[in-house]
Amino acid sequence: MLTQWIEKCTVQRVSLRGGLVLDLEDYNELVISRPIRLTLPPLDGYPEEQVVIDPSHVSVQERPLLDLAGAVCTEAWCSDEGALHLNFSKGHRIDVDPDDSATSWELYGKHHGYMACLPHGRVKVVRHDLPEDEDVSG
Image 1 (cartoon, one colour):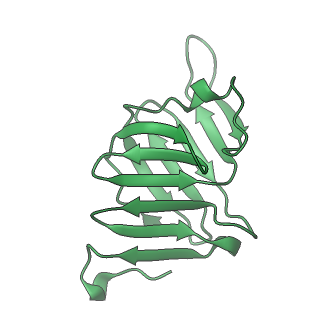
Image 2 (cartoon, one colour):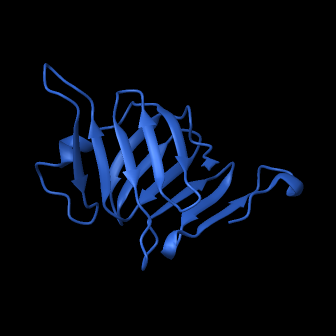
Image 3 (cartoon, rainbow, N blue to C red):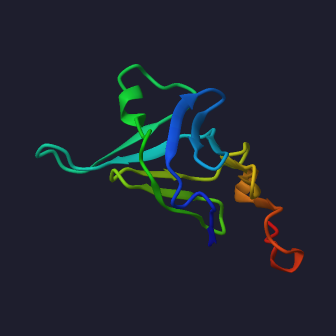
């Protein structure tokens, strides 16, 4: 399990360009290219709900569900198989499974490095904020 450096960062902007793009504070950007499972928190008597959204084909009705601006990423990690898991302060969760033929997600951090889930769930990590003996290789 690899914990990502975006924990405790606020989502500043959400956009749909080349996938679902979450711009987070401290010059971090997460691009999700594969379908996500978005868990919505309970609201006004309605129970928690999970929806699947394909970032390359987001309908007009699905766009408001992606309003995460202002939420803090409270937990961010990926499994050894490349599945990405994110929890947010507003109660939302995002889960992304690896794909056999395409990159599922990429995380860019100006002060940290690069992390991605490549085809077949291979996780690639390049860190420039850690000493070489602590660097994580995927």
